[in-house]
Image (cartoon, rainbow, N blue to C red; front, side, top):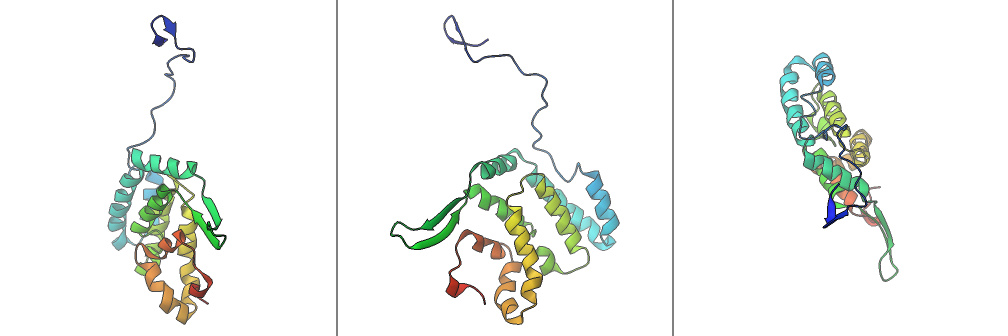
Length: 192
């Protein structure tokens, strides 16, 4: 037992815990996932496979860091705050997220997991995007909701030529339309 003062034992001390593994961190998520590597080899066109492996290896290394897991834990521990009105009583309708949440979304966008497969358009782009998305799911899931909605919105936006001309180019270039998730879109600005 640790002593808190000379001669006094720590009242909260129990024992040293030795039967728990070390935290799983500072490793490459992709390098250790042989099933995902096999699935890529089976589903990707051969010309895309090596480049995809390199990109996913870089993503796996970034995602497996202690800092990334800490960022994810922080984002999940901080509940989003709804602000319906400003201090003068006017409607505000804004949700405030912890900065860690936005940092995680930026990682997803930087790696093209929001709309990169649509912008790429080559065979295997969506398979590679799915593999990266799967790796990110090992770290954090809350940010995947807006990223999934962004990814899923591209085909719908493309069905309307006027809307596609206005929105699609911005959505497909990182950081893209994911950034609008951090601010309210007033009715006059809403695409109709």
